[in-house]
Length: 258
Image (cartoon, rainbow, N blue to C red):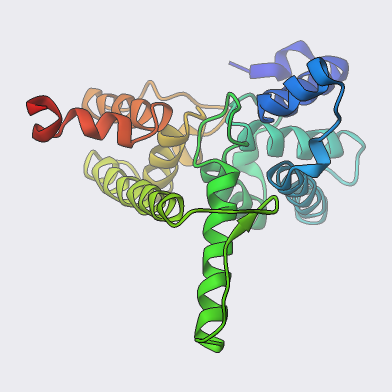
């Protein structure tokens, strides 16, 4: 019940941080490194964003929990900040601290971590960083088009132009993910859960993370949820792990008629 805190070992926790980061990295980059001896990690735009997010959120959590929490600038606050960020971003779900007791800024950051996920081609759940990166580039593209309607622009990732159909599929996935998140949050609320539990239960289920906030925080379990809410969370976990469209196609009449 204490998760990794039960080991009471900083060495174990640091080791797991390293392997969570490795597991949430695109396996193609690992292949290039191991088989081709090419260290292309920091040539990959998604990987650089991935490391940036870990560093940024870890720093925010570190200062927030020390200035507004009970850590009092103790050394293990660094480890807890990095571990919490890495665990949630990589959708691993382990915990070394009860982030339910963290200050509000940290909780907001933690809530957004439920959605991001790791890199494409990795073991993580969530939306994946590459999709968020593509959506941000698309928004920048649209702003440029508004300012200079006659300008010729393209959306690039890693120096390669992203085809329009890929951009449309990504936007569709993003909207579908948000719609399912909103709908399942409402259903969790209908089953008697408070707003924080409802929102994070929906996000955590879709991202296949495990713990959330509220009554399903890292020091609690999902055992108290009514059976119908557990069925809902099971369905959301399948949707999130099997990439939404794969599951939703199975409910399409057209698919079974083909």
